Length: 197
Image (cartoon, rainbow, N blue to C red; front, side):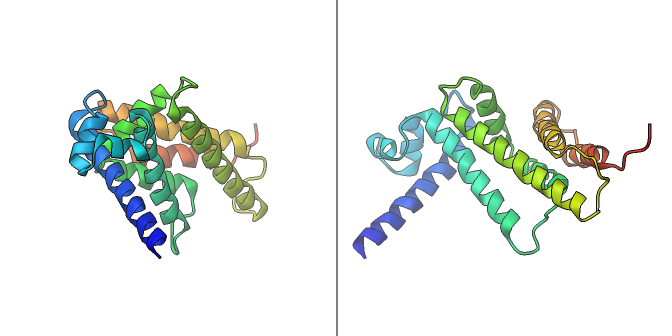
């Protein structure tokens, strides 16, 4: 019983640290988000913090993983939106109220081009999972006769993910951009019935 209680406390502390980190990132930016600051604002020693996360890059990557877990839980929930285009549009709408998460995502996306960065594996896994989920949805829709036969599920999945991430970069420079509308329109264009010729 004591081990379970200790585990629950540790898991709760870990989640608290992730939330505090995102708050600091939103307030201070990447450069000034330090392990020392996170430890102080989480009410834990630096050594204690490093028991959970061995580097700042690891910590920031885990903030994104936690965000993804929450999004996936919403996707699996009863009455959840199943259409991938709409799901991505709603996720982007949520980012308009969570600029820190959007900035962190794009910051780590750029850093992840270095294979040694902890976010490299995260993004490879994330993109593979997203593409597979979207492609499976499209294949099922085609089999059910709800979309035009001959659509390339893999290409369409990659294209909508690219549109989603790309418009987020533009929105961070120009918040007047309607990210959700952009993704909905791209999704409709990608999945629209094909005409002969």
